[in-house]
Image 1: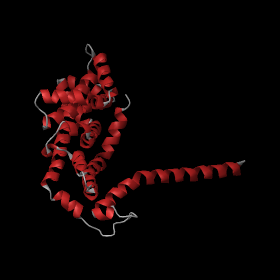
Image 2: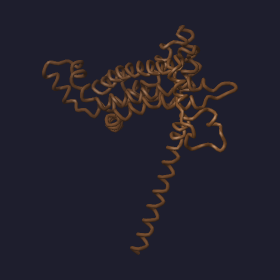
Image 3: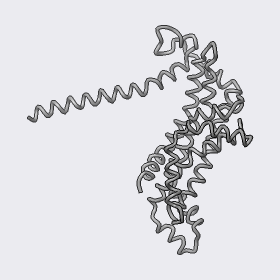
Image 4: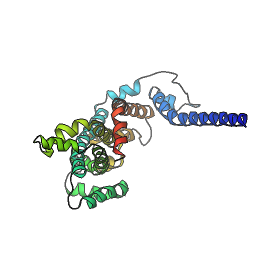
Length: 280
């Protein structure tokens, strides 16, 4: 009986490792192909049979991206919009979360339910209404349009995440500040914010990633090339008669690197904030 169990356990272990290896290959191969294609010429990318490794290693795609002011503008726009939305989202979410976590007021439950319910609405259903609002207010094809629109989608989850994190902090901290003669404002900025760094970082990373990768609203609410973001810039490399695949891959790599660096640097805080914010 023991031998049978041992053989069965080994079989399960092997099957598990095979499944994990297959999953790893499925997830990693597209990333490798993107990186490899960025170092190929466009001609080699269309070659049959396809080459796993570049036959002629070249940086022409990166030179075309980094040497073109128009394409560099895409990166500036993405950084500016994502950075502005991240700062505003964290600031507003922190204040709102502190109110939900520490105070009781009329309509608190209803307001909290409303914030949660906004997460159930598919963003694509709001595309036309947002387009109409942006045009009617005269902010079409501006940074303001993108920033305000992204705030609508980032704030609800950010408030919920920060509220969950602040709920894990004891109220004794606020009471200690009050005993020393401090106000709620003092408790928030002098005590709560410094020890809420994991939650703040988690919210910031989530918000920045969401804004950086957004495509649909950036395509609809902007028109001029000078206002396009990186996802739109990649799409613009798909011409009517030719696709610049190597430049598309190079821009994808350049667009992914900052996000990878941000996540690796903030990974410890990000995981801690997501975990603490998910439970009360």
